[in-house]
Length: 307
Image (cartoon, rainbow, N blue to C red; front, top):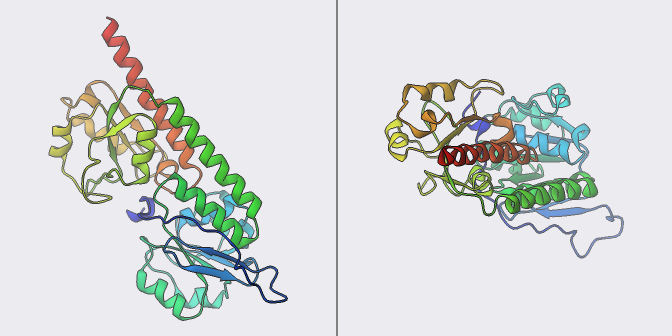
């Protein structure tokens, strides 16, 4: 799996979803939204042929009910199962431009921080309608669902998916609002060793659960660190994804450092990467799991204190 295929996007803008105020006769089906770079994306009618340039974008299109309208996507687009049957147009890092043009899409959904920027610009130059997506938080994902619902003719489904995400995240935040803090190191990659700062979506999940990201103040969104930094930070819990949905190799490697508090207390938690490292509605499921994991740390802490 490529590193970026599991990393979260980096930037989001405020959503403005509206049809243009003055529509010509015969343009009643026209839809328009602003994408995450503030560009106006307008279609004369909801898109029926969509090309998605990242796995999480494909999943979001399915989430708003537009899965059958996706005619092309990239490698690693594996959720839901139906996504695996969609023709590939390359990887998120390098798309097959000729194949995309030949598909005659009326909408291309691109990933600002993951796709090749020159290719995105070339698609726009060729006259393709491109929506550039880059949510950075739960609200950004919710807004994306609403926008994609508008662009594909599924506004109600998009709004429902967005509402479920917003309400679910608010409920978790309320539940853990007064929870005792737990220091957390979240690992997104092994070689090189990588984590996230406090501007990343995963940090929002950690915060919702009452966690404290030990590397939150680093400058880069997804910084590279060394093992000595982790040993110095001595987090109470280590959470990680991995190379696959059921491989916990990265966590097991930390057992070589028994002096780490997280290792000593058996606070090593695996969360399938697609549940927390893809910007989709399933991030709520991953956050729930993370919250339960951190709550187990608190229970153990209380049990130790009562002895």
